[in-house]
Structure formats: C-alpha cells, structure tokens
Amino acid sequence: MTEQSTFRRLLPYFKPHLSKLILAIGCMLTVTAVHLARPMVLRVIIDKAVPQQNIELAMKYAGLFLAFLALGAIAMTMRVRIMARMGAEIVAKIKTEVFEHILSQGVSFFDKNQPGRLISRTESDVDQIKSMFTQESMQVFSSIMLVVGTIAFLFMENVIVGFITIASLALVSLVMYCYLSYIQSIITEVRTQNSLLTGQITEYIQGIPLIQLYRREEEVKNRLHNFSQKKGDLDVYASFIDYAIGSSTFRLISEIGVLGVLFFYCSKEIYAGAMTVGTMVMFIELLRQFFRPLGFMVEAVSSLQSALAAGVRVFAILDSKPAITNEGLILPDEELTQDITFNSVNFSYNSEPVLKNISFKIEKGKTVAIVGKSGSGKTTCANLLLRFYDPDSGSICIGNQNIKEIQPENLLKNTALVLQEIYLFPGTIMQNLKAFRNDIDDESVIKASREIGAHSFIQKLSKGYETVLAERGSNLSYGERQLLSYTRALVKDPKLLILDEATSSVDAITEMELQNSMAKLMKNRTSLVIAHRLSTIKNADKIIVLEKGEIIESGTHEELIKLGKKYYELVNIQNGNKAP
Image 1: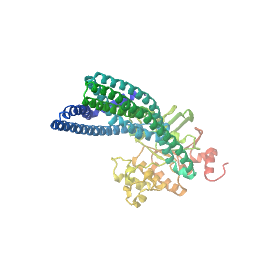
Image 2: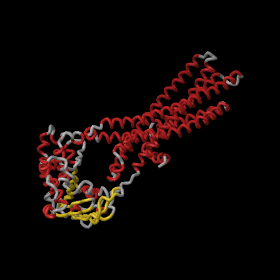
Image 3: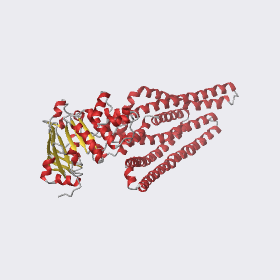
Image 4: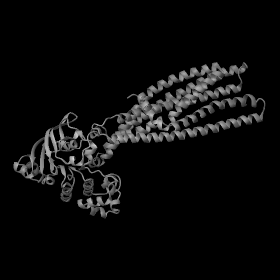
C-alpha cells in the first residue's frame, strides 16, 4: 500500500466530524486574515499617525492592532481545541477497529505476529496517525492559505517584491523536497527499530522467570542496551539532519538571504521617494509571516509523512484476512452433539507435516484421549477440531456435517477448552467464571463451583466471589486457578469439552484432587483429552497414541497395556519402571 492510498483511506474518518472540521476551517481563515491585516495596520501607524503626530489616530490603530492579536489568539485556541477533540475521537475509533480486527483473526495470524508488534501497531502507530487529524494537518492548510494570501497581496502592492517572494518560495521548496526525501528514509528506519525494540522488551518481560532461572539478566540487559543504543544513534542522526538541513538551511535562506535582498531593494526605493518606511516595514513583516508558516510546513509535512508511514503499517494489519471466516451454517444444538469423525486428516505448519492421514471417531458422550511425545501432533488435533486451523486435506465432521460448513461462532459457542496455560481475565472471580456474560446468574455459577469443588477455597478469600484477581491470577495457586478454569467450563455447559494438558503442571496430590473435578466436568459430555500424564486418562473410552503425526495404536487402557507396545512403554516410563 502506498502513502497516497493510505491518505485516501484515512479521509473517510473525517466524515462524522464535518461540522467540527468546518468550524476549524473558519477559525483557520480568521487567523490567516488577521496575519495579513496586522502589517497593514502598522503601515498606517508609521506612515500617517507618526509623521502627523496624531495621537488619536495612533491609539485607534494600536487598539485595532491589539484587537487583531486577540481575535487571532481566540481563533487559534478554538482551532487547536476542535482539532484535538476530533483527533482524539478518530484515533480512539481506529484503535478500536484495529483491536477488533485482531480479535477476529485466527491462530495462524498470531503465529506470524509477535505480541510486541501488535501492541506497537495498536498503540504507537495509531498514535502516530493522530497528527493527520490534529494540529499538524490543519497547520499545513493554514500555512498554504497564508502563503497564497501573502503572495497575492505583495503582487498587488509591488510586483518586484512579489517576484522576490516567488523566487524565495521556489528555492525553499527545492530545499524542502530534498530534505523530506532524505529524512523520510531515516524516520522509517527509526519507526522500524522502535517496533522491534518494543517487541523484544515484550518478549523478555514475558520470559523473566526463565531469564532469572538461567541467570541471563546481564546478557538480556546488554542486548537491550545495544538495541537501544542503535535506535538512539538513529534518533540523534535524525535530529541532526532535521536541524542542520531543515531548520538551519531554511533560516539561512529566509532570514539572511531573502530579507537581506528585500531590505536592500526597499532602502533604494525609499531614498528614491518611491516607497514609504511604513510600506517597507509592512513588506518585512509580511515576509517574516510568509516564512514562518513555510517553516511550520516543513515540520508538519515531515510529521504527516511519518503518520502516513504508520498508517501503511496499521492498514496492513486491518487488511489481513482471517484464515477462517465466520461464515457457514448455524446448526441446532442437538446436531452439534453427534459423533465427531476425523477422516484422513493431513496438516502442515509452514510446509512441515504435522498430522498424516489421521482417522478416528469420538462417539457422542464418550471420552477419547490422545497421548504421545511432545511434537507428535496431539494439540494440533484439538486446534483443528476448534477450527483454529483447517486441514490441508481430509475432513472433520460432526455427524454428517463437515465443520468447515459450520459457522465457527456456532461451533465454539458449544465448546469449552481447558488448557495447561490457564488464562484468567482481569476482574473478579465471579466475572471470570461467567466469562463476562450477563445472561448467567450468580446461583448457577455457585452451583457449578460447588460441583467442581472450587466453592470452598473461594469462600475463604477476603471477598469471596468478588475477589479481584491479580494479573494472570497470580494471587491464587495453580491448583486453584485450574479449578476456576474447570468451573468456567462447567458454567458454559458445553456440548464438546477439550482438555489440553490440563493437569501436567501440578504435583501428584493436586492432580488426584483435580481428577475428581475433571470426572465431574466430563460426565455425559463428548470429550477430547490431551495428556502427558497417562494416569489421568485410564478411564477414557478410547486412547489414541500418536507418533510423528501418525496414529500407531488405539484402544482402551487395558487393551493397550495387553498389546505391550508404545503405550505400555510410556506407562512404564511414567511409573518409574524401565521400558521393556
């Protein structure tokens, strides 16, 4: 996407704010008129009031000059406030759109985009776009109006002064073009480095326990220091270029070059009697005002280019299409309780085969467990069933219906997932157990909590169900957090239950306690259990053993033990016995 197309895509965001924009433009025109009028007032004071020693006339025009100053200040203040309000509202809308779009993406999207990168796009880049809707954008238009108005007035007053102004404008424009062309590449690199640094900091913060465990604090600090130093050097270089080429060269042309030429020409005209001192003062003041907005334009255009570059990155996120769209049939609940069948399913991550010709059935109301070494494809089976991904080939069906033809929202509404990595929302325990659904009453939650066995520990907390959880539920033990996740699943009352390594991170005693809760949760439900600890799935109706993405054994616990192959070997290893 080009910056021009990005600009066109940003324009519709102005539409709901047209009244504010029109009022801001009115304020801008007022400020422009005041800027042009003030030098003319000075000419009258210098050329008429002072030579005639007319105090009354001098006071009259001095008051008019002050009135213009006040009017300009009021109009400028109103413009800034209006644009700031409009910019804040538009930026809030864009942030909401970006976040909602990220929420709509499938798991594959997050495989390709680090959390730090997404945070940078949602916060930093969208904030950068703000200059499109605030003072900078209006400053560009205001400056253009003042420049055009000044040139027109100068040509009407004196053609030679008009041509001096046009020549200076051409020279300044050439310098501005060269400057902006060069500085833009530096700004883009600064933004890229900033995004990368944000991503690294996010990843390191998430991995602090491991960093401390392996005593790599110094290495991480050095890496971040080197990265920050590189970004800092770019910032310093960008600032130097901005001052050395942008500000200094601009000032050299305007203040020394053009005003010097104008002063020389006007002095000759005054001595020849063809120009008054007041007219010269008016010309100088007009040209000073002429160059001031040009200086603002250099800065504002640079800022707007940065905003457009940020807009390109933001729209790249907004243009990403979900791998799985929310389209398809909406089936009645009874149709979503049929047998689930994997038919010759194949799946790859980045062209790397993960599942190969997988076929099995989960009968209605039964429990199927999948076991195997890490990387064997266990969790991928669950991800495919949840439609986080779609198979490369083969099909997954509920009854006779391919899940690709079912609306994902319809499927997920009837499914509960309990993971090893427990996520608890910011908020109270009650809000977490309801998953922030307002259609669930407290009594239903408490009933489910009693059934799972979480009620007793919740009651002991200072505020019971209204206890506010710390980040990631860190004010609870792992076992307590797991009980909350079971309760949350039971409150949902799902037709399909998926447990993925749900007890692999607890001690043996806690695991025994959680197994009772798991049994209550799975009762009379179609369940898919993925487990490393084989003791948790002895009572499963069917156990499937995966190895390198292929099914090598299947049967009940007793059948697989009698078979004496891979499952038997895994059981012996976990029991501390030597594998046969």
